[in-house]
Length: 312
Figure 1 (cartoon, rainbow, N blue to C red):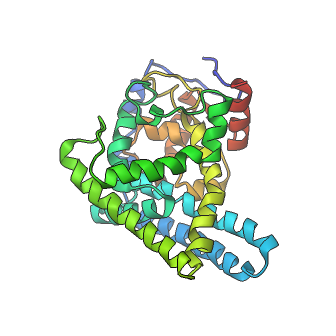
Figure 2 (spheres, rainbow, N blue to C red):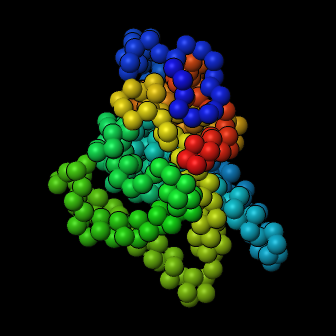
């Protein structure tokens, strides 16, 4: 199968069936699907450790403005990538403990400007209807369909607008969305309202002269969010618009720091085909079936460059 995007693919046999169902018997989910509190705690500790280190760097350079912006950017990358544990926890695969998944997922969402309570409903439809323009929630808004929408996505203007407008609607319980059942609206409303209240309290603290939330949270997140959007663009952009899980999702081969902070989610095609496999088993799953996917890209810079060329 020829790729629709000019990115070198990992050589190998792409697929045996149209949807990858033949792989279901090749993967023993009793082994690959085993969840682990220890693995989740270790990865969470590593992520928080990176956040503490970059936060310390911001604190050290605060008096020196030429160094502050790169330090805040580095710190921001550890904040916005908290999206990854939030995502993993909504799948209930980060930890074996349901309580740990719920608590860590909510806090990680808070730090990355996502709400895990809402995201679990949203994301379940994304997996069920991946790349379906009529039903995939990720396609509700234009996603890099041309260069204008690509730049809008990278700029994060749409992301921040939706955080204000959409989350205010969710907090009021006024959202009417096909993937959000009526009996879940109140729970989502309470969760989002608490999260927004925390942001407002942090903003009020800044106005009152306590600037730590500005330098250690809001500004770093603003600086780093474009990189998060570039990462997400690589997952499905210009892949097939169908239910073929071997062709509608892209795995991106990348370096250790990104795999660490993104909890192995660069193995995204593997994740979509087997969403019950926890993050710590995805590298082994890639070794087993990674050569079956049509889109295996060599890196995020290369992928975004290729996307830009194709959208010309």
